[in-house]
Length: 93
Image (cartoon, rainbow, N blue to C red; front, side, top):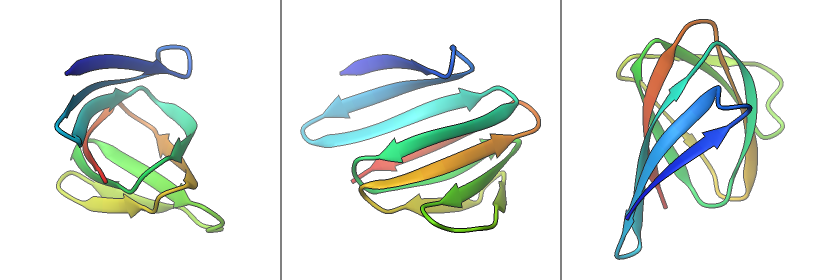
């Protein structure tokens, strides 16, 4: 059902809900730069602030603002960078 996850010294936290093979999370990022790995496809919408993202072997960062969405393919690493507190909603699969 619900699971609280903490990453990077508690600077990134998400609350994940899983049921019947579906999963989604809401999260908050403190200012900083973070690396993650997507096991399955992740579709993320920025809810507040701005999140810059670099997916896989991309060389440049792309900034996403409130209401904008980015997708990370399965089995792909990605970086997130925020200069101020930012929040997101993510659907998995």
